[in-house]
Length: 263
Ligand SMILES: NC(=O)c1ccc[n+]([C@@H]2O[C@H](COP(=O)([O-])OP(=O)(O)OC[C@H]3O[C@@H](n4cnc5c(N)ncnc54)[C@H](OP(=O)(O)O)[C@@H]3O)[C@@H](O)[C@H]2O)c1
Image (tube, rainbow, N blue to C red; front, side):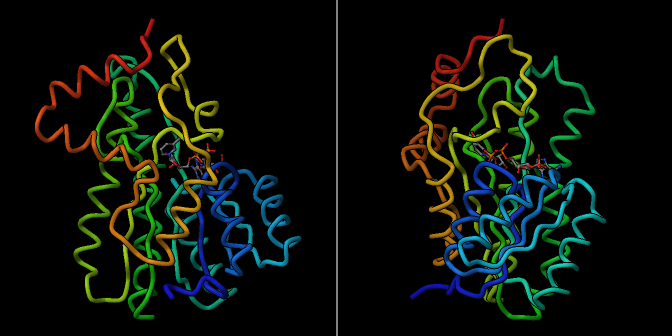
């Protein structure tokens, strides 16, 4: 059977586009009560309208996940409306393509603030309630780059490694509580991600295999229904992690060969 999506209260951050939007729409179709969070109000309202037009329930709450008070307000508004939270999908994220030496301290901080602390704030605001409920699910959307870094993505990789580490520690602490933790590690995905990110390489940054946001959303939904520790929407990526254990230098050379050449 698995977890019943119909009627479940699910918060999705970064729901205004890409993976978050696709996940929110799929949850809406499945009958979940979906809380949409991101900064762009008009985009959120459009996704909420799309869910309602298809017969679903949605609540749009403009939120900057880098602001702790904003994330707490998001959680409070959800509880005020629906009285519980079954799933928190920490999906909001931003990228940056630049050499380490071309990345400012503020940029390192900003990527941590959105990609890592955004999830931390959501988890800290939500977990006490989930523990009282005796059930819940935290889904953190990290990246394949959170398991194995690529060149010119140091700040991004660091933020995603942090998210993977947080997910691992938390899921062990929560064993037996009824609250699950899943970490999702997509490869390159069709979305607005690459247009939105600052690219200081002088060449396009996207390379290698690419999957659709809908495909990643389906994997997220499957994991919500049947919780698992990690989700790899592109299974061959696991081979890279295995190779990295035995031959990291070889993997370095492979990834450098496959990466864009910075001007
Ligand atoms: N696309 C890829 O190749 C790829 C690969 C692996 C992992 N991922 C991860 O997947 C997640 C979703 O990315 P995507 O590909 O769907 O990209 P996207 O289309 O650019 O979506 C990113 C979402 O995050 C939101 N966001 C950004 N900063 C935010 C902030 N400070 N507060 C609240 N929301 C914020 C954006 O909304 P607003 O701008 O409206 O705030 C948007 O809804 C990210 O965590 C990303 O790191 C992406």
